[in-house]
Amino acid sequence: MARFLASKQLGVLRPVDEQGEEAMRHIKHGSIVEVEVRTKRRMKHHRKYWALISKVWENVDQDDFPTPDNLSDTVKLCVGIREPLILPDGAVSYKPGSIAFHNMDQAEFSAFYDRVCDLLIRRFLPGVTNEQLRHEVELMIGVAA
Image (tube, rainbow, N blue to C red):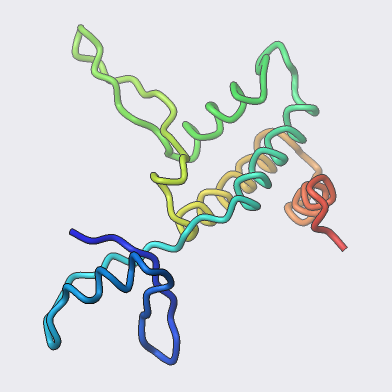
């Protein structure tokens, strides 16, 4: 199975590098292939998530969340990013799932980020609007106007 990056140009997917060109040469003309579309994650959005977590962590009780990672793990569990653990007695528990680049494409990460913002406003920052929180985070990473 060949994997490569492509861009959409005039309604057609085209490889963006030599690796993709090579993979395309091995597909016979007229062949039907299966394509999985995943939008490459943006590092800036990942940094924005951690700025968001840091900003909220500064405003919560650190006895409950000793580190930003603790807050992030709790948030991931609350928004459904979790993996089941079967305990010896058969009970099910959960551990926080991964938001690593290979586990979520950009579309999935954007939806995750939106759920996180909604949760943080509802549970951790009463009186703060979604717009205020997002603007503050954008100021932190230098993308706000």
